[in-house]
Length: 372
Image (cartoon, rainbow, N blue to C red; front, side, top):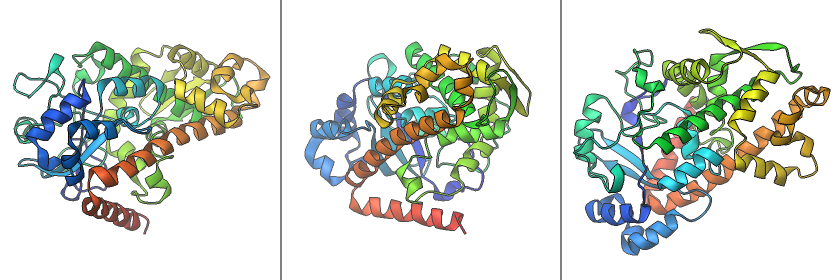
């Protein structure tokens, strides 16, 4: 697993994200295999109504939390149907799974022993068999490592070249992950540029700053952050604790192999507003960002990112960088807020009242001590 700074694995739940092709089939198999993973309410309701609840609202992830395992202590795992994951990665309609994928993950798929269904997608969670083969070897199953830490794993260990290779058995999902991360980097660049940016002047942006901005994409609008129910240093802990992994993905991966303009070294990325514009034109603006900007400020179309991209060479753009940054950030935060609010409400039902209260209290205490 990956490490954050200033976090103990003894007090954190390990996060997993399972991506079945059909969430209803997954719940049917998983509920038979692991009924104790589900709250009493959903054991009573059964798989069909559980799946309807899973797909309800603007967040399409179902979490089973506080699950005891033999090899990895207590974990929580989310279930997100492949079609919903693809939509989020490409459109940012939830920025939930997509936001997790902005940060380092390790993918694990069928090794011939894992209980799987059609085309290698998980059919149910055989958590203890899985943990014995993978966690016991210091690996994780599609783990964003958002809360989990292993103090014996250092973020500056040598990394496999597979960080930059196509390692997923699903080429479309792999490509969607690449598009999602490329856009995350470009949005982080936008938010890091000086408000008075000149179209052709090159600006040096530190990688640490960019990695923090990438993390902020999925945290700044989070309802838990707004309620101060998260570690105040969470963003810095992830960006700095996993620096080598971020470098492998963004600096040595996307920038070195896919963005063929600007320049970079181990400390900074140097590029101009015009070069950034060219990158984003190629990558495209996520559809949900376009939709939200139209809703928030329908009369200010010149500030909408899709329109601003056509004005990169004009004095108009140079004079409106700050306003474009403001509206774009506001739009991203709204997507995250709506999605996280939906997930928070769902969590009280999926985890059960007692577990939810304990989990919320633990989060609040971590937040309290991080702010002292």
